[in-house]
Image (cartoon, rainbow, N blue to C red; front, side):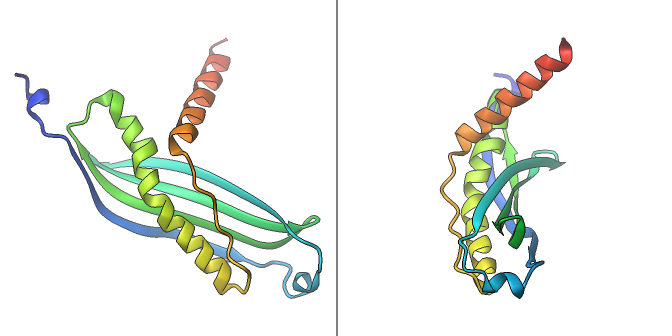
Length: 153
């Protein structure tokens, strides 16, 4: 039995925290008097950084922006992060854990914080939809492979 086979897999949350949060209302108060329904745009990104051996910081970042025509009503940028201990997991499964499992744990915290800050700013909360992080991860992988293939030509 090799050393690698003898290692018991470990997946533990060390800490979950709000790493960054900003709210802007650049056109208030005038924009608040508008009667038109604002458009909503939500962007999401996942990033992971090794911190130490077997320790990773994973972050889910969102940008929520509402506009009336070309004027911003509000813009919220938030980054929810966590420190995860991940050991003894085969290399081919490690990226799935970091790219799918960790964001699934962090996302409910992010959703709650974004809804709360928007509500505290005086707007009805924006409830971000559930995300299929496996599909998102697979899209990112396919896009990265397509970009890499394009660069190789």
